[in-house]
Length: 114
Length: 115
Image (cartoon, rainbow over all chains, first blue to last red; front, side, top):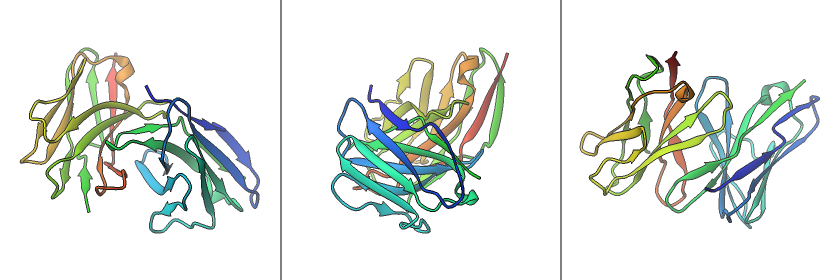
């Protein structure tokens, strides 16, 4: 089956610094990738949709200048949390979409901002 | 906008028993897909089963099957012979709107299998 990797799996950073999370589709080309945020014991909240070679589409309420998304190739999308603050601490998950709406998920990244 | 509702926040069953998780949705579309995803303690999202709305036959994957009632807009997941490894959060998912591949997830059901 389709495999999506995500790196790092866990990161701690100081308040005010930036953190980059990578999402790769390992055995297929993903024209569309999605970035989610998940709070403890809650469902997935879609942050943005990333299309290869074009600007990401952000969901309402998501600050695009804070959460920078780049989809530079058909196998790589990155999420950069800029000037991170403790309230940005969360679990971030990426996925790769298919034309049949099925999504393949990465293992997630736990971000802790101190 | 499409909505997905899971009315059971938590459930628990004894190992080897059968359990059914409910999901309802709202749409004006006729042809669509529905999904159940599992998120175990590792937090890796795993596709459990998918159903295509134009197919009348309920989807089955080993011990997992769905009861798809299109007219009632209901899409429940049945887990037979439950195993300890089935302990997880289960999310029902449905396309948010058609054409951009986004999914809307339900709030989830936390399922615990008791040894």
